[in-house]
Image 1 (tube, rainbow, N blue to C red):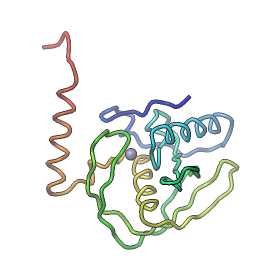
Image 2 (cartoon, protein in one colour; image 1 turned 90 degrees about the vertical axis):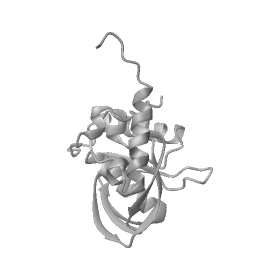
Image 3 (cartoon, rainbow, N blue to C red; image 1 turned 45 degrees about the vertical axis):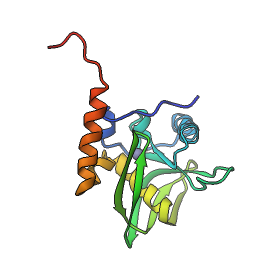
Amino acid sequence: MPYSVLKYPTPGLRKKTSPVEKIGEDVFKLVEGMVETMLAEDGVGLAANQIGAEYRIFVMNTTPSDENPQPIVFINPIVLHKEGEIVDEEGCLSFPDLYLKIARPERVRVYAKDLYNEDFVLELSGLLARAVMHEVDHLDGILIIDHAAGAEKEKVEKYLEDSSKGVKVSGGL
Ligand code: ZN
């Protein structure tokens, strides 16, 4: 069963996640659900705290435009190296319909552990480098709206205003 993705301003999205100390049955189950959720939502990546888990884990679909998804799991990821810069539109499953122009490194080298406790290092570029930065941000409680600069800031303000209008408050003053 896919999880439902938490939407901003759910407080868990602002919480820094904790490193995984032991990769056991609970982590297997969580990752399985995260992959399922990412694919169901057509996401390129998903961080554990987007579904309410507090582990330092994200999953990524390395073939987002392909019919055969190739998901990878990153446990306790660390960005080792960043290079170049590209400004491009970026969305987030926790902010439906919000797309912001954000500067991200063109290439990254990232370290993580896989589900079998093996270390790996990947070099990624373009959209996948962007996704790594986006997901590592999530694990630190940082969101796309924090990267908005200039005109993009107004877009964020309007978005937050419109989405708060949708919230019905009852019984309060
Ligand atoms: Zn996101």
